[in-house]
Image (cartoon, rainbow, N blue to C red; front, side, top):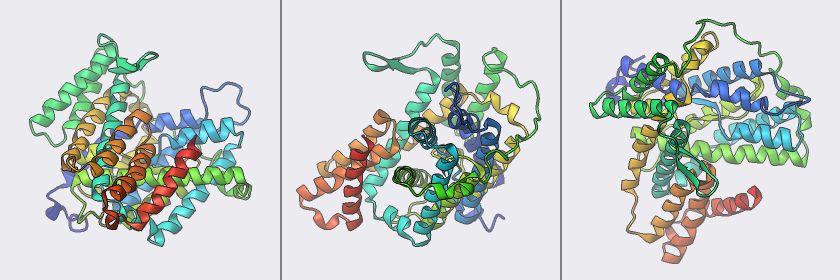
Length: 438
């Protein structure tokens, strides 16, 4: 095992990788509860055809476990996968609720997008596109995602709240749950400054304990629970695959394809940059990593959940010292265990994970120092990429802004030979995407 994952070459060990896998799991465990809530449209009363929440919970855990296991064993990266936030909201609120498409047909659309991804991955096209992205834009994507998840962390902590006049403002810093999140941030910073590789993990554990001690987090009333049946959603994508051949479903499939393609690309690049995996502006074993993502989407659709994708929260595991696919194997195992010990996950609240997201954002923002800010043709697309992600609450939109302006500024500067033909194609695609989005 140590030889297969090259522990000695990468300077890691079982303990470090295990802590990294656990840290990643705790950072993204919220998806086990959020995803069923969104896909079942729990906040919409009197819905005539609603997905079964228990089945979606099981499908979420299984899709995450299978996808993460493939990533760990095949691509050997400490990157975890799960049903993507944003894509699940599009599935539920746009496709099912607004367009009145049955959730069974929507799952068939997810399956179709996954199968197309598998074909594109095997052909090598996805890897070529990612490797054609300029290094400066890759750095900007990583930093932008860092700001984006830090913003999510600040919002989850209650430090940043909505305001009708200024859009956002400082939250109530005397609120007990906000103070708990602040405690978590301080504790995590202390651990990391003192050189603890698992500082993010230790910070979350300490925060959860403090929350239970002060009555802000409910202690679990039981340890083991039965696994909900997956029967209500399993195989529905196959059963309704014949319903996808309409123009409306084609739009659904293309949207799943587009958002997943670039969200995954951004996540892989960001995590790889943080872990030091990038070599000559290329991601080794990118094809295998992308195949894991594609296979996970197909698997998730069959089980009964929306598009499964690589998670930026994997950066928390990397920050805890994870460097190999063994960390992903640990994370996958924990997702399977979560099926039986789901009551214990209730202590991992948004206040507990807020510190991890904020600190990871700090770590990822460090890539800003490598961007050539003194060259305006680089600074403009890089800045727009970075700033648009948190302000539009979308990784894909941030990437679109940067990729649209990069060819423009490089062309005006006279550096046309440095513009890869794929970047010209992506320029056209992103312009069309932004118009289609609205």
